[in-house]
Amino acid sequence: MRWGHDFTSLWGALVAALCVVALVAYAASIVWASVRQSRAARSFGEPELLSALVTYDATGRRAVKAVLLVVALLFAFVALARPKFGSGTKIVPATNLDVVIVLDYSKSMYARDIAPSRIARAKAEVARLIQDLPGARFGAVAFAGEPMSFPLTSDGAAIAQFFRQLDPNDMPVGGTATARALERAREVFARDPKSKDHVRVMVLVTDGEDLEGDPVSVAEHCQQEGTRIDVVQIGGRAPEIIPDVSPEGKVAGVRRDEQGKPLTTSLSAEGEAQLARVAQLTGGTIVRAEHGDTGIDQVARALQKMMREELSEKVETVYAEEYAWPLGIAVVLLVAEALLGDAPRRRRAAAS
Image (cartoon, rainbow, N blue to C red; front, top):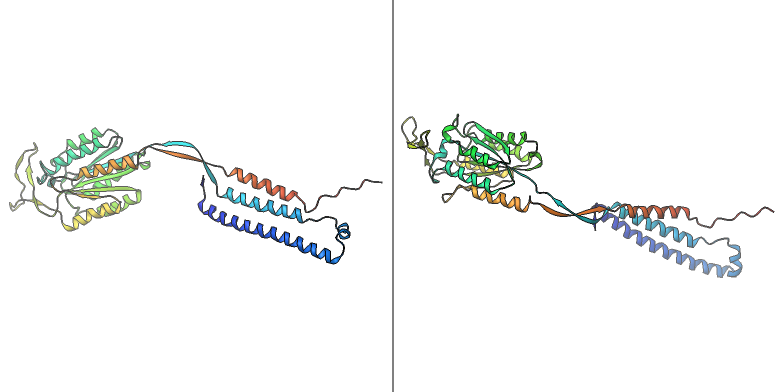
């Protein structure tokens, strides 16, 4: 058995205990009054003669009325606590998971500190993440200076193909506009009517910091909406040379600046703090690439665990409220107490 109102049931138990104490005290007072009345009658005169002068002794009826009132009060508090009894089981369907993958396509993702390149490895591991989460829906945002997106769908293969067919050279505007990308991911969720009832997760995969917008501000909005952001940080503070990749995908040397110096990519301490703050605000995790891995597989395992343990189908006991029974008993006892007089009704004498 369970209680619908734990606070009420606790106070009800306290009041019930006080009522029991009051009932015992009242019964004791009735007994003591009866003893005193008997002593007074013997001191006043002959009990047999005095009994003829008393029309009715209401002590017994008053005791019964008191018992009815107290017991009715006890049942009323039990009803107020809303007792629940198990009446069967029900299957709680699995909660759907919506994941929008936000993948950085800036040209720094051509760096080869992760073989064969950051972007090639990221696309492969994103495809594996999608494959490892059957039943989830996926959306996609590819970004550099401007984002492009793909709506939420149950067709994970379409999302993998969306990422697979793009390269950093295909992005119309260079840069790393993380804030705009996260805002576009919010729009992907907002445009889907089912998403508001699902668990929403963004997976941000990037190797750079946003020097134009404010990703932390977007993360605050995501936190208010209940959307979690997991961050995969590829690359660190050590400079990495950026290869010059032709439109055909062939490496044609090293990218150089106007002075002819090789271009490198690295993440500043402020950039790392920015990404960590984005994850922290939304209750997400941040994974940093190391030992030649991007870290996307760690995010995939965490999402798999969530789907298996937190969002999976469950069997729960159904509890039915049965407050009507104690409430009905309380009403019956109160009616009986009201109808029971202190003395029996006198019969009218027959007319002579």
